[in-house]
Image (cartoon, rainbow, N blue to C red; front, side):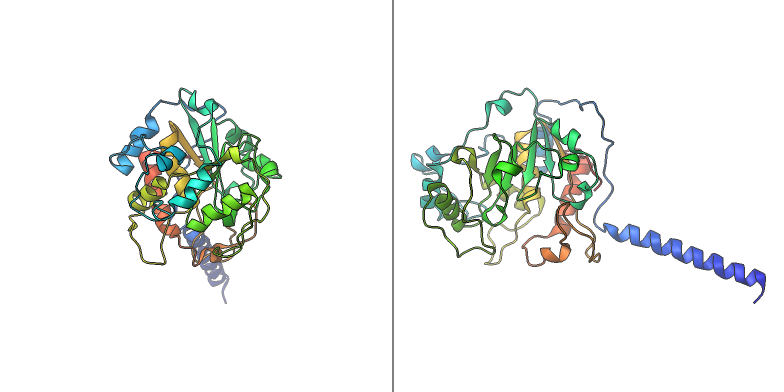
Length: 332
C-alpha cells in the first residue's frame, strides 16, 4: 500500500469517527433541545402577574381563583361536586377526604402570601443536576419546589438545601421529612387513588396501617407534623393532562397521567410570578445506560409501565420554554 493510500484510509477513518460521535450526541436527547440561559449572580427581574399571563396562553381561560390546596369547608359545608374520579377529581372519595382534611391544613404561609412578586424554581430529579453546582442559585429563590423522595442531604452543592414545597404520593414518601426538608416545608400530597387518602389518614392518626392497594409499599411509620401536610387540588392534574398532554380525562382502567414534575410546573405557573426549572429531561430511549436521576443508578427502563409518556412531556416543556413561560437553569 502506498503512503498516499495509507493517509487516505486514515482520513476516512477519522471522518467516520467524527460522524459517529456527532450522531451519538445528537441522539442523546432525541426529544430535547438545549434551552438554557446562563445563570447570573444577580436576580432576574420579577414582574407581578407575568406567569399568570403566560399560563393563560397555555391553559386558555386561566384563573387563579382555583385554590391550590383542598379545604375542609368546600366539602363539609358546600359539598363541592367533582365531575371526575382521582387523580383528576375527588368523585367517590369524599368521605375519606373529609377525614384527612379535618386533621391537615390548607393555608399558604404568610412568608409566601406577602411577597409582591414570587420567584419560584421547580427542581426536577434529573441527572443533569449532578455536578451542576447550582445549589447556591437554587437557595436564592423565594419558593423552591421539589419532587417525591429526591434527597437534599449530601447533594446541597448541586440542588441546594432550601425546600418550600415538596410534592409526594405514598409510594414516593420514602424519605425522612426531618432530614430532607426544612422545618417549615409544606408536604403536598398528590392523590392518584382513594387509598392514598386512606394511607395519609392512618399515618397522621396512628391508625392500623394499610399494606395493600399500592404498586409499591409506602412507609408504615412517617414522622411528620400534620400541620405541614397539604392536599393538592386535583384541578392541576386535570389541566396538566388536558391542556399540556391532550390526554382524555375520562380514561379506561389503565390511565395515563402527568409526572409529578410536569404537575409541579403547572402548580408553579398558578402560584408564582416568575418560574424557572432545573434538572428536567430524560435521556434518549435508546440510551440504556444513562441514569435518569442525580441520586440513584436507575435508567429509563424503570419508567416502563409507569403510565407516563416522557417524550410527550418533553414536547410540552419545550413548548413552555419556547413561549418564555418558564426558563431553564440546566439544559433541556
